[in-house]
Length: 295
Length: 302
Image (cartoon, rainbow over all chains, first blue to last red; front, side, top):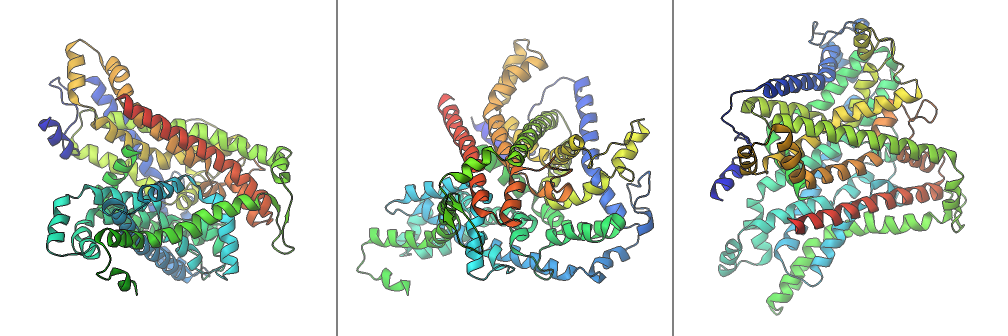
């Protein structure tokens, strides 16, 4: 049992199926297939990047050069000079994403803590109700939300996207799981020291919740940064739009005439995701697999 | 201020409950306004002839009856089901294949590198990926047709032919999402104890038997979870399609959600759109209930 524990803990580092047999044919075949698959996954992104650095006249050069052959960094300035307010799009996206992420971290950690560590009448029922809302697809609620935002005068206002984004049943679930795993002794000790529930939350639970907060923060950041459905419905003037909207329009706007500039814009839009991924890969992967396995 | 509720005369039990309610309050306000109320309201609207300008009137089940006589809705549902079947099959199948191969003997560095590469597209917006692939799919100038040409295959009308357009959407979806299935499967595979394989190998089992007699049965809860999650996601396909084909050519790639979006926000026939969204909701509800029920049974079974 103890050995299993070690394997599970050090999971990414240990080879799961060690056998003493020499490397066989199957290993080589799977190695080759994996390599081909990895190349296929990389190719569209490589094309995106190398095209983004090519002069417009050679955007459609065939056979395609997968690695950049030329370095026209001017293409990266082009979106900022075009009639598309690229800077605005970027700022709009950032503003919405940060507001939603921070908001969810606050509401989800509070609710997650309450559901995990506090006792109050109706708690389990309320939690179940919240969990059940995960089954409601966004397309079902969008019409009344649209009418509500219209009545509030929030059409073409980032608040129409931020407000519904401030809560998350998934986030509450994630935070609750984390707070539940904390040892009771920590809180007992705090109680003895005279700490109330609010102080226990702020000074004991929250400082230890870093990994869970990071996980939720990353997942929310990415989902909001990439969101298309809500912005498409609520934001309709160029200066209010988000980046995915702008880039989708940029493609049509400039026609297929200038892929180099479009690809430069897409590359810039993907960069934050890439940075976050490189910095926090382990957390992302662990969190997603854990949430996946738990169902 | 709330502090008044925390006065010493409260019993500890009541104070704990008070703080509990206070902590879940923001979530529940949002939940009520943005999920519960819209859900009920959406049901109500689905029984209305809705007009933004003229006001609404109740028309009973007319919207629901109208669906049966709506050929575009039928096509949208057929498209969505075709997309769902293929996307789920290939996402799960290829994801499982990659996970199984990654779980073989590989240098750790390789495993982590490949895992990251396969997973990265999951994090990129559908919109951006559709923008990139729209160039790759171009009939005359596209990279994909160029390589098919090298193999001696005539240019494929990826986005202008009804069948190929659907194929194009499915291929893009698998390219983007199979990494998520791979990730979950890999974790599932790594949680299968080594001893099972060792014991079976001692009994003379070959690789095939190990896979079908040990891996698949023990992985079945994970497989089922992935199938359901991908099915629910595929039924809601929207971003990719609106950017890549906008539902065309004709109605060939129009999905249910794209159709709902169009009737709700382009023709503003909100009542009918709400009714259609209810049908999608019902399907997703059944799938989720099924997933919940079966995973329960699995847990008890083990």
